[in-house]
Image (cartoon, rainbow, N blue to C red; front, side, top):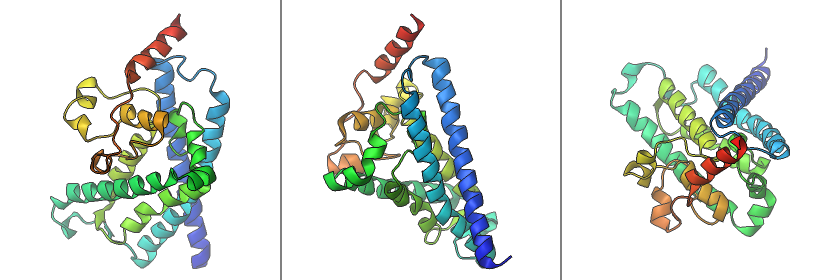
Length: 253
């Protein structure tokens, strides 16, 4: 096969992997929601269908640069991804993960905040906020223009920050879990974490839900750092856990 054909195969393979990852992760947390918060997604079947359709388009958009970079890494040595643990000190493994998460969070904060300018919101970001309330299926529910801003960041980072392939896998896992759990409509993390010292800096569903309620605050993805620095952190959604519990209780009644 020609290099172009192999690149296309790699893009299709990565698209399939990303789509499957989305379906399994969002589907898994949607099932958890059904079991622990029955009735929370009641009446949202049409919305969930739209979330899945937009997300599968996003998987294609994410898969194109990911497939190109994967091919370049394996066949041309383009990237700084490494497989031998001896290439860098072991202490660098957690450092690289932290660097990727911080860089991704920084990119996400500023592009996300820009998406809330009226013109960009109408063109692209309104698709994501059409999920009212968001569900576990909304994690990748983006207009293609917005999906493109998210699709380039990790592929770009592998050219500038060295990372072991397993550490990169961990970054992608954290990205997936946080993306889904921040949108699923209830708080899976314990109260001591959400309302404790760690919760002052980490973003969970209680924090991101307030963004979906108020729109002009809480723009971060993993950390509250940029929101705090820029004065856009408006805290946690009030009575978020209580509201979820009420929905569960109403369904049971």
